[in-house]
Image 1 (cartoon, helix red, strand yellow):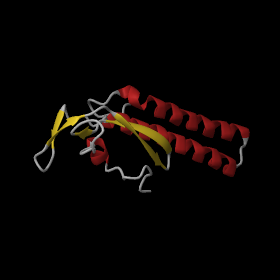
Image 2 (tube, helix red, strand yellow):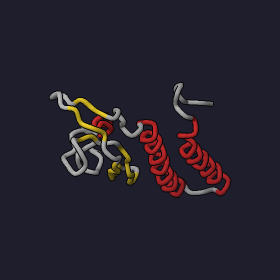
Image 3 (cartoon, rainbow, N blue to C red):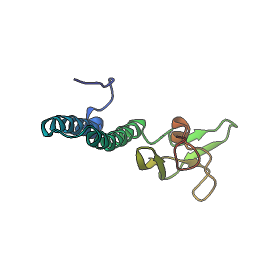
Amino acid sequence: MSFLLPGFPDDVFAPARSELESMIASVCEAVDAGTAAHTLEAGLFRQLLQLGHRLFESFLALSGPGDAGARLALDDGRIVKRLAARARPYRNLFGAYQIARFVYGPREGQKLEAIPLDAQLQLPEACTSYL
């Protein structure tokens, strides 16, 4: 069964599918072993966080690097060029990530004028999630 929209690569969700299958196996094993409910609950919670991490990684992969082309027109009419891609640390309730994204400015070493992916995803200025 596929939960994908046309144009989304199926393999981007493979790690999340594997994590979900592992969770289902944990439930079945807990039933067979007579595991206490609170023990299963604690294990499932850890696995849910890992599943969330995998799904958020898929979200980032599908969002792309924010490539708006070689040049970008700003709202004030200025044109800035795409500079070398930069990684940005980000932490949310599922864990830590390094988000690779394109940045735009007059030239290397000067103030960055636009970071399309950060704007698209409405990322906070700080490296931690709003949650």
